[in-house]
Image: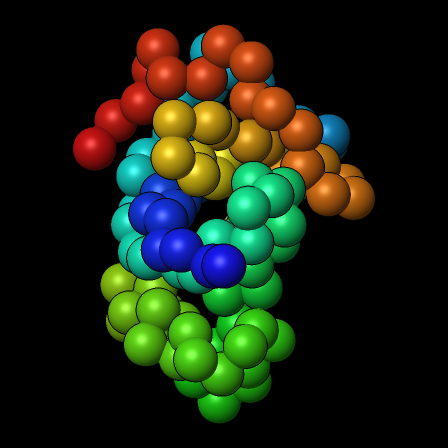
Length: 114
């Protein structure tokens, strides 16, 4: 049975567009969104749902259509797409976007800005 969980999205403040964009626990991250999703019970699958939401646009949906409200709100706030090095928090666990998939964001949380 699915249950609702809160997903929190943190975008890395400074992206290195010319070099490697990787997770850095000492970098500054900004909380840009928090919204409910239906949990699959697997936090990595839930991160994939968040990735699809944050890389969709109201006119170009890449996620389940039931999340159109989350997509619209995310884009109304002028947020960029979720990218390598950004962080998604599902419950108490934080994961960073890898070039393919997600990994635990070890050491994340010390330098978060609101």
